[in-house]
Length: 284
Ligand code: SAM
Image (cartoon, rainbow, N blue to C red):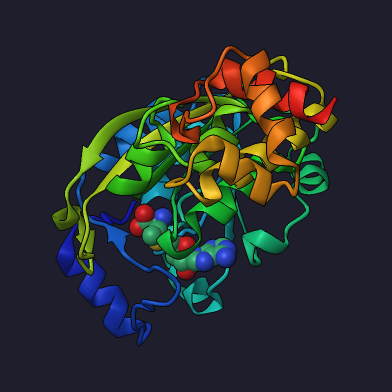
């Protein structure tokens, strides 16, 4: 197995295949020998569990996933990596690379086609320019996922794993938390990547709930409420919600009062349970 955390190997591959790293595609590859095994250990619950990887790069994480799972399917957008991966993944017969934009993959059907009835977990060092869209694509796809273990920018990790009701939380925090439990696993310094990015990173794991918190239509209403509330977070909840949801202030004030909240409360102070209750009151 080619040692893809060795800079001499990386340089040799880069030269052999005339490969240049694309900033636009978020190509910062892992070169710290401890990080990929750790992501794979945290992300793969059992050998029988299949793994969907997003973005192979030279295959440094893909190799570690394939050592711990019977079946790995990796979706990669940059076809220039084809000859590189032919060499770096040559030792593995349990990896399939699909050359596509992950955002254009209809996930539910795709996972069914690739994995059949096998359980599936997602593991990836995400391209940072589309972290949130990819996470929402995964969570909203309707596909059943065991867990989503991904490297993201440190600030994104803090936001994604923040407690709802604290200043660190935002619309994306709530959108994730409505569908699963999010936790930060470990931090990864910028020097662990080549080329080294300007920011540090962290690995997080999202475990989707077995039973949804509420039915899908109620979930959509909470998401609308959250979008309106966090859209203008400097305003009071009354002003933010009445503007964002086009509702009379009196109606919003009454809904807040029903939930035991005063008119000058700020949206970011509301915890998850209150958000669910408030949205029910507002929309019913
Ligand atoms: N897994 C490798 C590693 O850890 O070294 C590479 C990670 S790199 C941060 C992100 C990878 O995602 C790149 O290989 C990039 O080409 C790929 N990528 C970027 N946008 C993508 C998209 N929309 N769909 C699939 N892959 C994408």
